[in-house]
Length: 111
Length: 116
Image (spheres, each protein chain N blue to C red):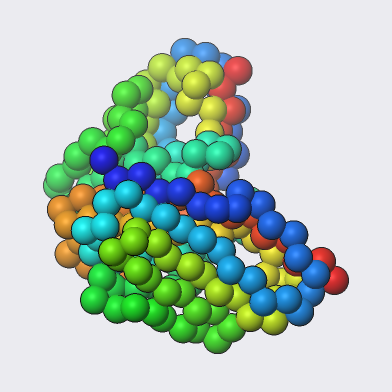
């Protein structure tokens, strides 16, 4: 059974710092991995999707990498801003299965 | 663009009451999903519908039923609500189910349900 963990559970950083969020999964035979952002009281918004054949994806100040063999993905946020404060979740999907989500990392960027 | 719309946004029920959570998407997606989100546990899949006319159980289906009314609408019903079903419920959709789609899931804003 696929299991997804995210470390740390919560993170607080001053504005302007670069930061890394981690996602680990137990079954490396994934089809794709997605990173989502969730604001308080809202649903999830997709940030980046990495297909199994890809190593990374970039969108603006966000860069997500994927290492299938080690069961890890990282989300790198450059020059963090208070508006980046949210909970970040990763989700993976294996062939023939449904998405499995991690518990999320709650990020606070302090002005 | 509406995307995925869920109603109601908030609801308080007494133990034993029933209710239906509504979800509709306007993106012509084939697959729709119901999740529950509990603190520290991420999202867990309750039921999904890979295409119109089909529904299947997810990880935590007990105490719930679903109906894929048409391509747009996918409802979740609690027949006899229990305090353990207090949670935030999310509906999501994708063009195709899971591993047949490299498109991201689109989520509604959730229904916050409290069972007293």
